[in-house]
Length: 199
Length: 324
Image (cartoon, rainbow over all chains, first blue to last red; front, side):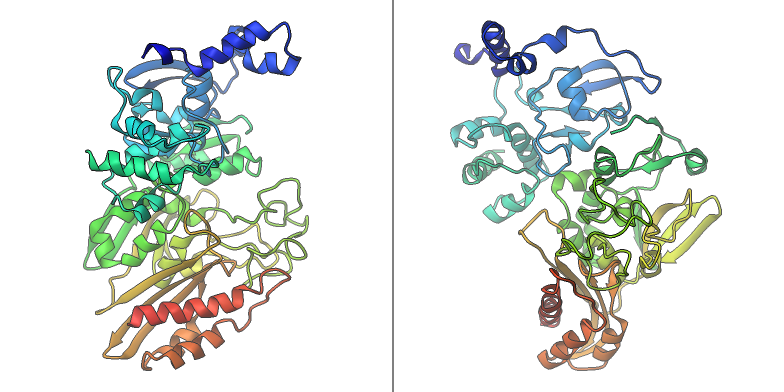
């Protein structure tokens, strides 16, 4: 575990800080932790105090009703494993489980998720052990750039839980809400088939 | 997305009261409304969340089926008794959207989803449906996906729902609740033609909600099929779809109901073709003759005339399969 204990995001933050003196403005602004250090946005009249139950932990938030679950996870709770692709429900990169069902978190309002358990990619591994679906994606090289991967895995775990058939054709159909622009589909299918048969 | 407030009433009367006055919208699954709000097509100041209302049950008895408007698409598609009695509903639902969206979107919301016309969904363009009187750039423009039936000089937007096509072919009705009480409307009369008022899409009045879909019992020996043709194999709206619901005695068709999707400004029933097939043997010649009549009255434009032969072939293929 030790060689992968540095997270990608931590690495990016560190290198941005190191490169800060040299990098052109935009890179430093986007990559550095400057936004996190700034004061929280002022309270607007619409804001609501809510509690979200994410990966077994409860989190109190003060947010506007228009904040998507995706943005609440990434921007407020810093759970950046869930990815923003299209932000319109078409790509599946933002897939998480709410109340045990896979959903597009970009089309879900965070304030409507109170009292509903939420699981993100960060909540899949139990006690440091990869979920069998995560292990199968690693074993079958089920990704290239990795951007769609958290959504693919969350969707794949749900597919198995739902009891869908594990034929190539069925996996293609039941994974159609997750787009992989690198085209790693054959490896993704192989991973799902193996993890699904193992359960 | 613009800022709004949200409230979650505990019963239907409170929901109807909460929607009155001002710029408010009901939200159920939210899959379509969220897209429209992100693109500034819809800009409500207040949302009325329907999650707490008890309209998500699916019930079957001798009088037919009742699907609560707040049942999720996936719940209806996976409902074993509903699938056995009306397999065409699951066929249409499973040909719609993606597994994630079907876990969110409700049956009522599916029937009320807005058109996928790109001009409607892009506020950079005029659109008579979004901004009455501003014009329709689709008619002389990019109309490949748009309607060849039921359009007007003001609008040619297609209705995107697969479920609505299957339900219209099943002679389903919707139960509506609003400030004026409860009423039931056949789904085939629920959607309005665009005419000169494309901004009016259904018979719903202000504050009206769909509370349930009602489906009559199947005919003895009823058979059905939903055939959907699209640009890719999954997670795509229909270029052409057809729902066929028939009854047969030996090789003779005793009852036929046909509805098309992807081609009309609303789900498109073909009563004359249904009548022409009724009482006749199920032969290729009969289907071919029906296909000729199916496109009568269509108004193809610069990029969507391909839908005519596609409609005709879909009709023949669906009847061939369902009568086999």
